[in-house]
Length: 317
Image (cartoon, rainbow, N blue to C red; front, side, top):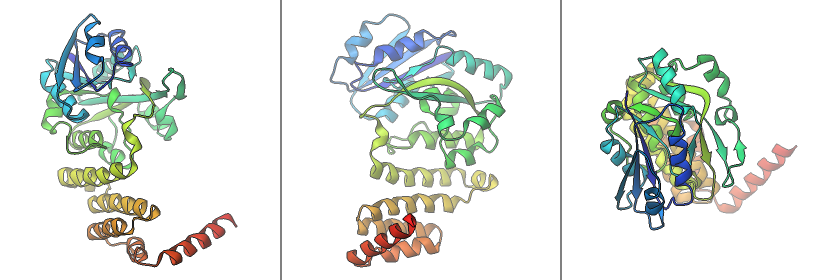
């Protein structure tokens, strides 16, 4: 078993040393660390060059994290790939826990795990993200066993932080790698494609410390919700039979994504965009709620404001 760790980096000089150090401090070593510099304009290259060890550095023009990770996968010589963003860190026994899990369950193609969240001063903000989303108990009971109906669970809530993943290189390639056309949720799309055809696991141990700061990608709500419709449509096309077998209605999945986007537009008084999104939701699946919101998009603004005021009064009473 040969493991390649892939780090996409963009203007990551303040944090990348700690990220690489956390990989090199593993109690079970990886075989190579591949840093893909995605067009940095700061001193990322100089910081990486100052570090010793099994580091491969590759610089390319800025194309986004998906393309950077894909480049790392292509350059990797390992049969297993692990990921870490340049501003995050692994916990010391991350790889050891995953290897132990694979020795017990050799049929697994992907092993992820829990993560904590830290600030720029390395102070803990969230002790366990799985616990935060009320998922920890379920994964503690599984104790590394393959996740039952993993695809269905993933499309309800993505429980796989990318920086905790250890996955077979061949499996990632067969699933189509990360989709560069999707900026938000490209990881969910890939994990869902893998879970549709292979056993996966999620450990209850903290495998990664994720840094929360103003530059985190998950801050842009509109773009994130637009991309969510693309992700769900892609998963539907790729895994319609598997979704149905696991109790998920494929068309409902996409309809809900469009409804959520429409609701966001509606609340932000972008009526034309909201109407378009609700129409797309209805095209996937007819629901009275979607129709009601679509019709509401064409009501006069004062009437909608009055309805909102009445709803707020009833909610408080």
